[in-house]
Length: 261
Ligand SMILES: CC/C=C\C/C=C\C/C=C\CCC/C=C/C(=O)SCCNC(=O)CCNC(=O)[C@H](O)C(C)(C)COP(=O)(O)OP(=O)(O)OC[C@H]1O[C@@H](n2cnc3c(N)ncnc32)[C@H](O)[C@@H]1OP(=O)(O)O
Image (cartoon, rainbow, N blue to C red; front, side, top):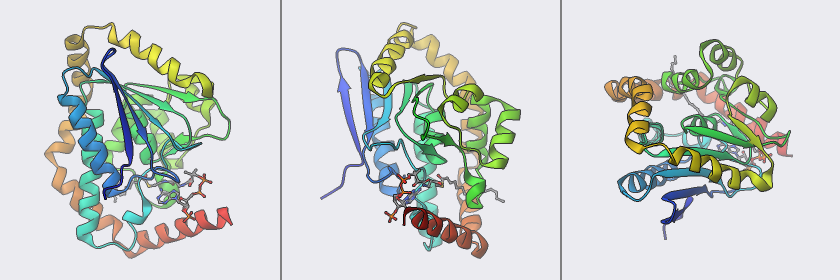
C-alpha cells in the first residue's frame, strides 16, 4: 500500500487548498515525498476552482527538515539523478505556480524546507524562539544550487543572500522577519487563521493580473533551470557522489544522531 506524505484539503467555497506535510519524524523530502508533492500541485493547478494554496505541516515543531539526506548518501548515480529531478520538479511546480501560495511555517525549516517556504508568495512563521529557518547547505559541506540562491535573492536581496548562504545561517523567527525571509510572525494558535485572512486579501486581486505579474518576476529563473535542467542533474550527481562530499554527509548524519543521544 502506498504511503501518503501530504494531506490535501480543498475548500470549494473559498477556492483554497491546504497542503499539510505529514511525514514524521521531520518531513524530510524523500524521492517519494517530492513526487507526491509535485503531483498534488499539478492536480490543484489543473483544478479551475482552486485559486490558492496554504502550505503547512502536521508534524509538531517541524515545517520540513529539507532534502532527505539518506537519498543522497551511499546511493547510485542513477538514484541521485532521479532524486534531483524530483527536487527540480517540486520547485518548478511550487515556484512556477499560478495559484496564490502561502507558507504557514509552524516549525523549523532548514535548507530544502526553507526553499519550499521562500518559493511561496507569502510567509507567516510561528513566533517560537527555538524554531529556525535558512539555507544551511554550507554547514553540511554542500553548495546551494543557483536556483536555490536565486530564489533567496528574489526574496531577501543580493547582499543578505550572500551573507546568509556563505555562512549557512539559520534565523530564529524575529531575525527571519528582520532580514525579510518571512513576512509576518504569529502565535501558534492564530497561524492558520492569519494565513486564511492574508489569503483573502490576495484573492481580492484579479487572478489574471496577479498571475502575469508573478510570472514576470519569476520566469527568468525558472527558464534558466529549464534551459539547463539535465546539465543541472549531471552537475548534482557529479558533486554529490564525490568521496569528500559523501564523507561530509556521513559526518553530518552522525552529528545529528549524537545530538540526539
Ligand atoms: C561545485 C558545486 C557547484 C554546484 C553544486 C551542485 C549541486 C548541488 C549539490 C547539493 C545541493 C543539495 C541541497 C541540499 C538541500 C538540503 O535540504 S540538505 C538537508 C539539510 N537539512 C538539515 O540540515 C536539517 C537536519 N536536521 C535537523 O537540523 C533536525 O533534525 C531538525 C531541526 C529538523 C529537527 O530536530 P529534532 O526534532 O531534534 O529531530 P532529530 O534531529 O532528532 O531528527 C529526528 C530523526 O530525523 C533524522 N533527520 C533529520 N533531518 C533529516 C534529513 N534532512 N534527512 C534525513 N533524516 C533526517 C535524524 O537523523 C533523526 O533520525 P534518527 O536518529 O531518529 O534515526
